[in-house]
Image (cartoon, rainbow, N blue to C red):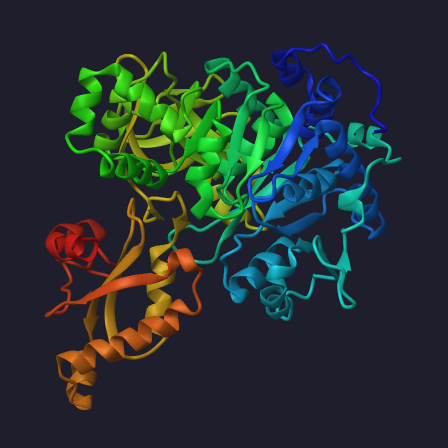
Length: 557
């Protein structure tokens, strides 16, 4: 492997402090750990050491360079959680270009929007996504190449040979050209209205994030982690790609199919494990299902039981268990604390390179999101909104200076949309959400307004609709049918429900799977201005949640 010479004895702290880019950091980590297994596949058992991984990165980088990818150019990736993702992403980064991921469950029109907005000329994907990409490409004129990683085709270029390379003559010293304030990646995230926004994150910002987390929670490295969240989400990019793979030399086991997560965790026995609340809820339910009594009470009374259950989960060697992306129910936090596995809630968002504040096992306050990192400043606005400033804050929203200036004021303060408080010990608590954004139990951000618009646009029978899903496992809808059209069509109850379901099915076909409506209920009366609606006919979501709490709970029963 043609890595430039350099000391291999640097500590993790030294590597983090000395790196000027993530490319520089990865090279330093690979030099120090050539024989360490870097990447594994849970499904196939494939393993690559850092030396083997860097050989493949070099070969892929050379091939991509031949396609004319320029410095600063965005390159779209549509790959599942597999070792090849980390190779391809890092190869693009080594060229000074900007790799970013697309959600694999996105509909073709959503993919087309992201491709067009980013200006990507090259898309690198698995062949399983080709059909959707071909449809999207018709509305994304910037795309010149679609390159697949896993199948030789007559119509698409591929990287099959490069991903099997055992040596490379790529000159990794080109990574020296990557500057701290160059773009590292784009994270496409939806606001409350309108289309997705491309969050521009820099090498400098992500390094600040990694340094801040390491200062608050210094980890030894050479451990084990599991990658299963989408790489389009900033959480997996931070925990798996930039942290485990590039900084800590933690062997990273990639899990393509979420249904295999529990088995993968049990086999991997991760030393660091982060998950969204829904995963922790499933783990809790699985443990309780096999226990005849009150498991939490029994574990509190018998610490040996907690140790047995941690081993059963595969979390007996976990030194930092993280939960975030959505609020974690108090009962879940208390349950795992009783098992001797304290869940450390964190506060993160795409616009700040992921984490703003973290809990650690030594400094933990259940229900809070922890203390702010030393690499950020936090403040509360007059209305209680949490403001964040520092090098971690995004460069801006891609191609959207007006939206950027709305989000970040002239003094550099980012408006988070969260209403918070800071207690006397410096712990941050999130007590409300200022912005209308659904973050489901799996940590996926969605715009309810966009989903509601899709439903209304799919037919003329739905007059009013509110999508519910914040902190929940799936989305449901409260629906008011247009009484005039119901009367005109002479629809009775069962016929009306069938017709509304057909309209929702049409809307679901245009939405990503995670956005789709799983259940709905028909309400007997319309919503009124000054009550469920504002004077300008906008939804008053908190009022709707309160008025229809029984109906909502029944939908999630």
